[in-house]
Image (cartoon, rainbow, N blue to C red):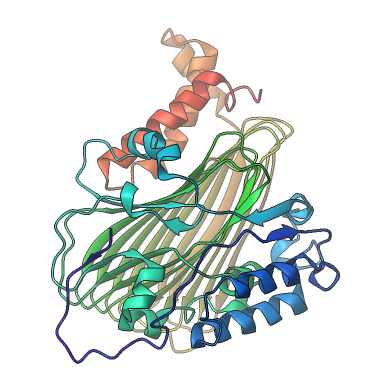
Amino acid sequence: MTGFVKRPKGLRQAVFSGEREMSTTSTMNVQTTTGKDAPWYQEAFEAFEKRLNGSSGTPLHSLRRAAFRHFAQVGFPSAKDEEWRFTNIVPITRTRFHLAFSPSPEAIRTWAEERWALTGVRSHRLVFIDGHYVPSLSRLLGIPEGVFLGGLADAIKLGIPEVHLHLAQLAQYQVGPFTALNTAFMQDGACVIVPDGVILPDPVHLLFFSSQTLEPSVAQPRNLIVSGRQAKLTVVEEYAGHPGATYLTNAVTELVAGPGAAIEHDRVQEESLAAYHIGSTSVRMLEGSKLTSNSVSLGGAISRNNVTVVFAAEGGECTLNGLSLSSGQQIMDNHTAIDHAHAHCESHELYKAILDGESRGIFNGKILVRKDAQKTDAKQTNKSLLLSGKATIDTKPQLEIFADDVKCTHGATVGQLDEEQVFYLRTRGIGEAEARDVLTFAFAGDIIGRMHIEALHRKLETQIRARLRQGHLSTGE
C-alpha cells in the first residue's frame, strides 16, 4: 500500500529510479571497535551487493559504495572520539548481528493494531518490520493531490524528484560512522512528500518494529520527509520491538522544511530493554519555516539520539523538546546541534532526563551562531532528575557565537526531588512513594504535554505511570 496521487507531467526523474532490491540474510559479526580489524562488514556488504538483483551499477549503489569505503576506513567510534567519549558502545560492536528477512506480517499484526496504534485519532499508518515497508499492515486515508506516503524503495522506483534532490544530502555519510553504515546498507524506510500549499490534516504515524529472530538482527531504515512551501504536517516516528529481543536499530531521518512550512515531528523510542538504538535526524529549514521536534526515549540498553538542525535561510523557528527515562543499567545519550547560519532565526530547546538505578545519561547540546546570523534568538536548557545515588548524568551545553547582535542563553541543572515538595504532599495525606511518583511524573509531563496529538500524549502518560507504579523509576529497582 503506497499513497501517491499522480502529479502533472514534466517533473524531473530521480537519478535513483528503476532500482529493484531484495532483503539480505548476510551475517554481521562485530569483533572490535575498530573497523579496520573487523571483517564482518566486508563480508556483509559483498553478500548485500549480490542480492541487489542487477542494480549494483546504479548511482544509488555508487553512493552506498562510497559510504561503505568511508566506514571501512573510520570504523566504529570509541571513547577516544570526543562525540562518543561518555557512551560505551562496546556491547554493540561485540554482538553478532545479521540482516534479517522480514517475517510474516501476521506475527506482529496484534502489536501494530493494539499496542502501538494511536487510539482515537485519525492517522495514516505506515508499518515497517526490520526496516522494510509492509503495505498489508499499513493504513492510508484520503491523500491530497501530489502527496506521497509510502516506502523509500517504492519512491526510488517511481522516480520521485524529491528523492533525487534530498536523499543523503542532509545526512551525508561523512558526518559519522553510524550514518555511513546506514547509507552503505540503505534499502528502505519511510518516504513522506507533501508539496507546496498542502495541509495534511491527519498525522502520519511511522511504526518501525524489530521482530524476534534466532540471532540478534540489525535494521537500518532510511527516512525522508520533505514539505513544500507553506505545507503543514505532523509526523510521528515510533520505534519498538519484541520484548526481550536483542537487536540493533540504526535509523537515519532527513527532514526538509520548505519556505513557510509548519512541521511537528514526534519521535518515540520504546525498544526492547535488550536492544540497541542509534537514531539520527538531520533537518534543513528554509525561509520562514517552523519546526517542533519532540523526542521521547524510554527503551533500549543503549540509546543514542542525534538531532541536527540547520537554518538555511532567514526567519526560521525551531523548538526541540526531549525526554529520556532510564533505569537499571541503561545508557541514554542525547546529542543536539543547531546551526544558526542566517539572520532572524529562533531556536528554543528543552531536554529533560530522569535517571534511576545505575543508569547513565548524556546530553551534549551545541548552538552555533555564525557571523552573519544577526538578530538570532536562541535558548537551550537541560534538566536532569536523579532518583538514585548510583545514577549519573554528563551534561555539556555549548554556545559558539560569532555575531554581535544576538540574544542567546543556555544552562543545565542536575538534582533530586525537592524534599519540601515531598513533605507538602505527605501532609495532604499522600504516601511517600506516591508523592515521589507524582513529582516525577510532573517533571516528565512538562515535555509530554507539549505534544499536540492527544492520543500520543495519553499513550505516553500511561506508559510512564506504569513504570512508576512498578517502582522502576521511583525506587531504582
